Image (cartoon, rainbow, N blue to C red; front, side, top):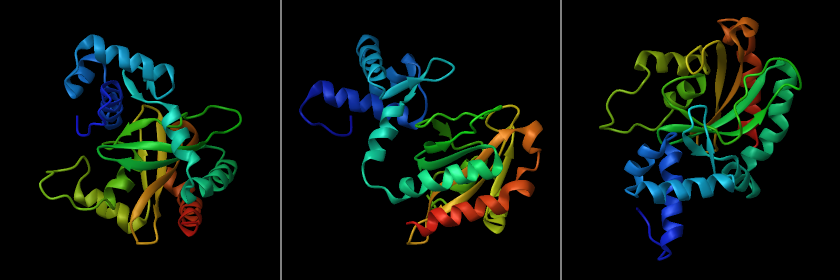
Length: 230
């Protein structure tokens, strides 16, 4: 464990939270990541799940739970405050699901959502931890990520990322989930760095295989509103 508070059970619980923040983990992966015995890791994970700090994905693996995002949102955060206004407006304009993602190491976390009130949705629960190797938001966050020498080739080619930077947005079709398409745009901070990606997503049959043609202009306008609030 990286840090020690002197309170063993607390340090172990934090180690479990840190482990699943990178990617969803089953019990074997959790034991490997934390070095804990199976019984200890399972007991802690189930306890954290009971409090909403962990949740299970469709494969039964533990991931960061919704309470983590809720607790983070209680602190003053101008981005989340702006998202509470901008995301519903974008949802109403497009009629589709809207999400806001922040990068977190090898993953991205959904920190705000606005879902259509009816109809078929592309539901991404608040607090979901998603990979950085697929999806339009992953492309946006990767395109403007700080250079990290020695990390090797990333999941997207430099040519693809250069296209994202040139366009100012990215789109994907059935990359993260079959039948789902999305388009994303960057949100910038005052120092000129990309700190988030705002996305519109929905069924391919409804928003087409070229969602950028349909929603990129509205999406980049919403991203500019979020940027202006920071």
